[in-house]
Image 1 (cartoon, rainbow, N blue to C red):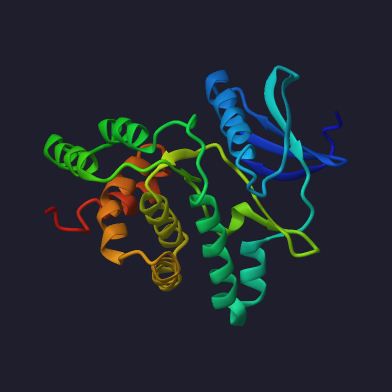
Image 2 (image 1 turned 120 degrees about the vertical axis):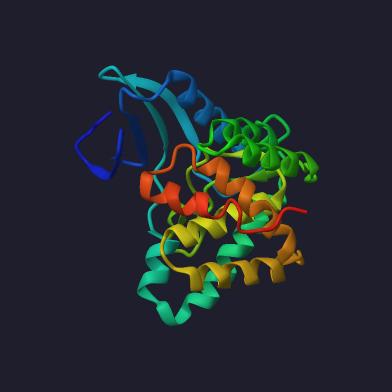
Amino acid sequence: MKLDNIIAKRPNKTIYRDGDRVIKMFGQGFSKADILNEALNHSRVEETGLPIPHIHEVTVIDGCWAIVIDYIPGRTLQQIMDEDPDGFDGHLERFVDLQLEVLSKRAPLLNRLDEKMDRKIKEADLDPTTRYDLHTRLAAMEMHGKVCHGDFNPSNIIITPEGKPYILDWSHATQGNASADAARTYLLFCLAGDREKADKYLHTYCRRADSPMQYIQQWLPIVAASQSVKAKSEERELLLSWVNVVDYE
C-alpha cells in the first residue's frame, strides 16, 4: 500500500488514498479495541444496505493500526452547501432525508446508545446532583433499536459526480432512539457556530420525521453531557451550557 497521497489529516489520524482504496491510519494513542470496534461497527452497518464505502481490511502498517475502505470520489455535502448558500434549504432537505434513511435501519448487534450515554454521563465533569438528574432522564426515555450514526453532519456525506450520496465515519454508530441522533446533529450545527442553521435543521428534521420538537429538546441535555467528555475545551464549555437548557420534568 502506498502512503504518499494524503487526502485528510486530523489529530492522531491520517487518511491516504491509494488508487480505489482509502487507508485510514491511526496514531499510537488509539487503542486496538477502539479501532477494531470501529471496523466492526462499519461492517454491521454495511449489512443494512445503506450507501457507505465497503471495508476491505484492518491491518498494521509501520506499527500503526489502519482500516482500508473504498475511495469515494466527489465532494462533501458541507462543501456543496458552502459553495451554494442560496440552495442551502434544498441541500438540508436532502441531508435530513439521508439521516431518516439511516434511522430507518436496524442493526441489532450494534452497541446500545443508552448504555454508551450512561457511561459517558458518569465521566462528565458535572456535580453529582446534575449527573443523577441526567441518569434519571435517560432512564425515562424510550429506548428504540434504530441505527444511529452518532456524528451525522454534512462533512460526513460524500456526493459523487453522478449525484449518489455515501455516508462516512461509522466509529460512533450505535442502536437507539432516533431523536437522540437528531439532538446530536443539532448540537454539531451549534458547535460549528451557526445557530440559525441549527434551528433550521431542527425544524426541517421534525417536519420530515413527523416528530415533535419537544421530544428532541428533551434529549439535548443528555446528549450534550455525554458528548462533553472527549470534546475540545472550547466545545466542552458550550456543550455543558446545554445541560440545563431544558427544565427537568
